[in-house]
Image 1 (cartoon, protein in one colour):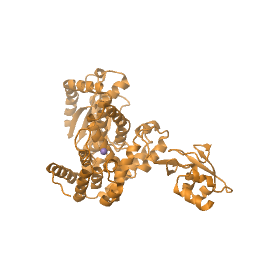
Image 2: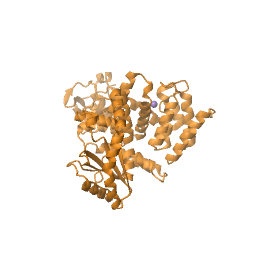
Image 3: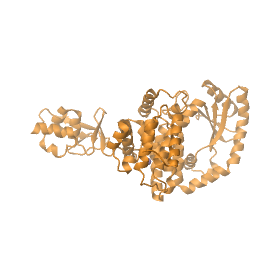
Image 4: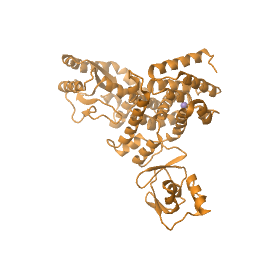
Amino acid sequence: MSIENPKQKEMLEDLLAVCKKNLPRVNEDLITKAFEFAIEAHKHDLRASGEPYFSHPYEVAMIVAEEFPLDDITIVSTLLHDVVEDTDFDLNLMTKEFGTEVTEIVDGVTKISGIFKGQDITKAENYRKMLLSMVKDVRVILVKFADRLHNMRTLEFVSPDKQKRIAQETLEIYAPFANRFGLARVKWELEDLSFKYLNKEMYEDLVRKVKSSRKDRESYIKKFSDPLKKKLDDYNLKYELEGRPKHFYSIYKKMIKRNKPFEEIYDLFAIRIIIDTENSNDCYTTLGIVNQMYLPVPDRFKDYISVPKANMYQSLHTTVIGPLGQRMEVQIRTWDMDKVAEDGIAAHWKYKEDKSTTDKDLDTWLDWMRDIFEGAGKDETRREILEDFKLNLYQDEIYIFTPKGELRRLPIDSTPVDFAFEIHSNVGYQCLGAKINGKIVPLDTPLHSGDQVEIITSKNQHPNKNWLKFVKTQKAKSEQYYTTH
Ligand code: MN
């Protein structure tokens, strides 16, 4: 195969150029092959917009290359992410053509669509463990974010019902999840797009009001920052000071929370001072200057430099009383901190000068992801974690806990007997009864994800032929077959 179509040729060149700019290593042949493969696989399909379907995986790959540039395997997987679900091509062929790594990511993306179906899970702690065990490869999550971002950006083309459903799911699940990964820009965009489709009137009203109040806002920012700039200059600090309006959805949330109209929300924007320094002491100096000039509001100071957030966010936050008696939030940080604040861990890839040591970096990234999940709960309440991780599970697998809190993965509809054999053959052989979440249950009771199961054993118990009627795992079946025949 080779690409004759000049438009496709140009698309491929554009993608390769972005990859070469942002990625440590680029296997051009493999990306080209995936590009051609995806065109072929989707050649009969159209998007809701009427464009050839291939424009979707292509644009998603561009988002990955621009926003989450991790490695070329992720780009290849992104180009192929809808091939298995939507066309006749299967995983075996994909493994043959692109190897197991790509196939596993593509398969993971397909499965995770089921996970992200939004269902309350009552035990946050269990839930977190389940999630950890599922997300073996974070590249799956990144492809999924990029996929959702592109679908949200092109949501105007689908039916109003579908718009609402997808926007709701995005707001409840994807946006908090992006936040958890430190991908602040993705989070804001997903929130504002969701808001636009869920509450069109309110959204458009806010867009109009923010726009029409721009002049007032700018003159207020000037009034606030001019004397401050003078003082910062006196201290010879190099900095950039900006007053950016908050995103529409966060303004809306404030209005709801305070039960006030737009006109009475004064903190529509925050002042951000980014200091051109490597030394975080300059941030504290700046804080001192701000607090000298304007009266700080008690209890509103947050030092995320000394104590970074779980997603590595660092910044100083203070709220002060401005020149017109209104509250103003001020954020102070260095450029490096600002990059992490905007792009999360992706910052480490995007802005790194030396793009050479990718395998080690990948490990660092994976460790960091694990830390995020392991660390969750230290600084947040369970409820918040729950809200952040309102996810579902793989549909064909369930996750069961031992009394000690260890996690076991079983096929759907497994029973306590399957679980017993999963623990150990002897536990299976001597299984007399079982408790699910502390309650005694019949041995053929189907288990559900998050259940904690305790097996009651007896030396006098032996495998029972009837068990074969309900066990699900191969292990339980073959062990019993062996001992009861
Ligand atoms: Mn897709």
